[in-house]
Length: 311
Image (tube, rainbow, N blue to C red):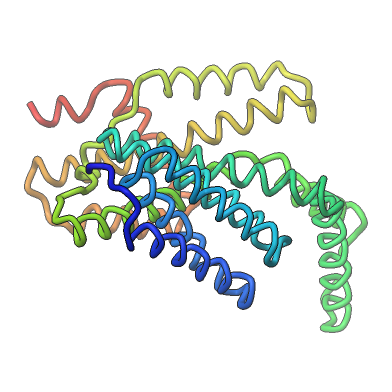
């Protein structure tokens, strides 16, 4: 896509971003939807204008975010600008859709980390303390409800166990942020493809999911983190890092396993019900479904099942 000089679209994209940001400030509940849409004007600015005009538009966006609803606008703009820039530059370089997805994921992740720092440093709100207080209130409320309906009271050990399990969620916060970033990035990228295809008559699209292929390095990372976690100090920083890395590698292996099911169904001319059922099992029976998909991903990556099926 060639770069343009200033035209009506340039101002349209900036105004579109500002309008979306205003809606986020006036109707906070809309943020769940608009978080996918906010990066789109940034992506379009990257695709159609040179770096000087892009820098000018980003400057306008940042200044507006600081002036209007800063508590909400600054975090939203952190996420939108970073993800939009990385997705936009990747699309401009015509990189592979999965590479664009990985860069969009990085942009969203950097934005979420920036929001975390903004909340902790600028607003003086401790996310850990807020989560702990909310958890304690929830446990107390649950205990009161149990007493009211006549169920035998939970012992102190039972309550402590529940509390420890809920606190363990904080250790998985990094991998949760990565997983959220992956979902947000792929939806935003898909919407950008739709917009560009419609306005510029291009044919941008994701390759079939059956072609999704991880490098074998992911398999080594997964197994090495599992082994090292056995020897690391419990509740230490190294343990937290290893747990998060292994869980992230596990998520990628789940995608690899699901892609094999799609590939197998396509190559063997099986019914589309097979991949559909695999997705349903993963969503509605996650304990079993995610485990089986991860195992299948490990086998596929380790023994090149896709290549064997194709032969």
